[in-house]
Length: 105
Image 1 (cartoon, rainbow, N blue to C red):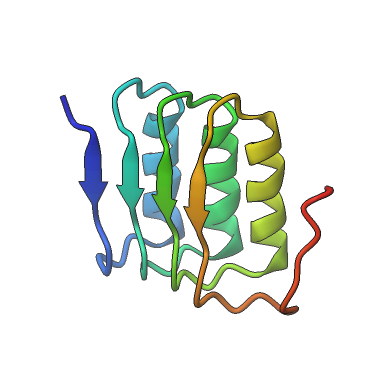
Image 2: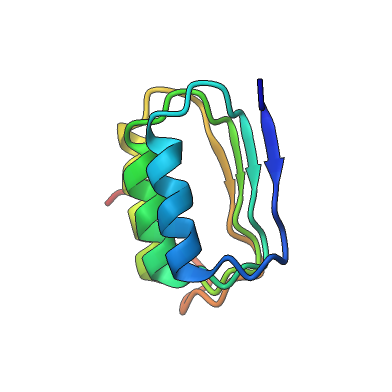
């Protein structure tokens, strides 16, 4: 049973993360996903956010260095609020347009 998937620097992009997010929606075993440095952008963050609304097993998601801006972080924040499990998401070294972000979305 796969519990950890590490795919940093694999040039997944927006299209690849869309497929990954589709599978993540109903996955019941994966606990850690590392897709840092894959240039998924805000569109990719939105796909993942939609998956996170349904996924109940993922605990750690590394999205560092993925060119995610405020809108992408907003999608993820909304998903976290709707998710029923504790989830740690790393969006460090992204290019968010402001240094702070309000999670009350």
